[in-house]
Image (cartoon, rainbow, N blue to C red; front, side, top):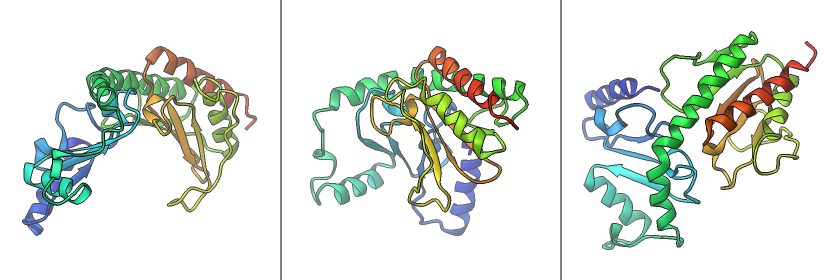
Length: 237
């Protein structure tokens, strides 16, 4: 969802519930557009530091930013009444949190290049992509409609073999809480769960779309996308 669309939703909520606290989960959206949700009226924005703003460096954590009073309320609820943001877990990782934030804009830029390359590549091969290559982007996710479960499996295998961790693993679809269908994932990150490092997931159901995301280095991302495309093209239709 674009920042402009978020702004319109904020306006509608304000009309109907003026006292509501509007909080946006901006996971995957940070640093992609010029503005962030608070610039269009959201009271606060939250997200994960093992996604965009961690820059592929932070090993854990999350953030909240925005209205000072609302941030303080959250801090008091999470930590302790009266202490608020004066204390909090550091996990001996403050250096990495700030190093990741410093690297985050560049990391997101590399991800966007990877996604645009993947969109162009799979469109050239005849697959529907969303968004298409060159279109405005609001996050670091690329949807590719592959059309069959066999091609989903091939894509995940082709991507996994190019990932820096567990490259020899074979992705297998399985149950995931919150999903009615089995979910297939490829993920080989140095930080567990850091989909910013390059990964994909796909619910195994028609129209068999795979969601590619992340990539800290566009050269590696292009090679991984080509590996996935090569595997898909070997599947007999």
